[in-house]
Amino acid sequence: MKSKEESLIYNLLTNKIDLDTFYNEYPVNLKENKNYFYEKLLISIEKQDLNKIEEYLDIEEYLNDNEYIKNNLDKIYKQLIIKDWIPSYFLERLLDSLELNTENRKYFIRILGINNFDKNDTNDIETFIVPIWKKCLWNLYKTGSNDETLNILKRYLESPYEDLSNTAKILIQKIINQH
Image (cartoon, rainbow, N blue to C red; front, top):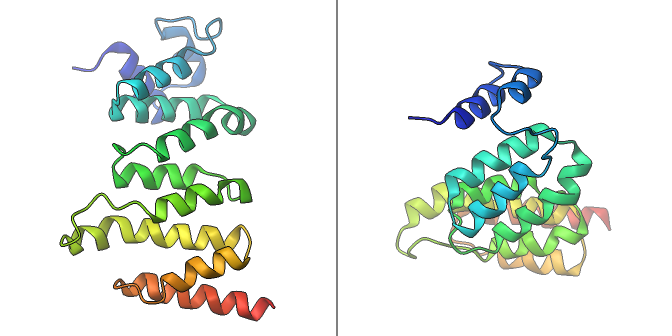
């Protein structure tokens, strides 16, 4: 059974109710308590409650503008990326939420080092983590082709995952063509 709060959040996010209805029916006065969901998000991270983290991130992203997200949620995305209890499907959401800039390169590089699967579990690695790694390679390329990027890409030329080695080849060629 969903609580009234969860139902209202779900209905807002799925456009079943408008923002005014949400604010009027939500049991907490959100106009006075603007940090309500942010504080709930922090508590859910402390408790490692992934379902609540997702719910509060969703509502925070929905209710707030890009500047708020950049100033407040961006640090949450980065904080979550370095947690070892974050599953790969959620890691991809965090990766997609990060801005493409040189400041975030270290997070793309960190994600390239994450593998929560057994080394022999090649199907799950290929299904879940290889697409995330591929996005990281592209993001590194998009944030600037320097020696560090080139060296990282070269390491993936011999990847046992064809998709990664092909991506590395393409990106290295793009870097070479730029110079």
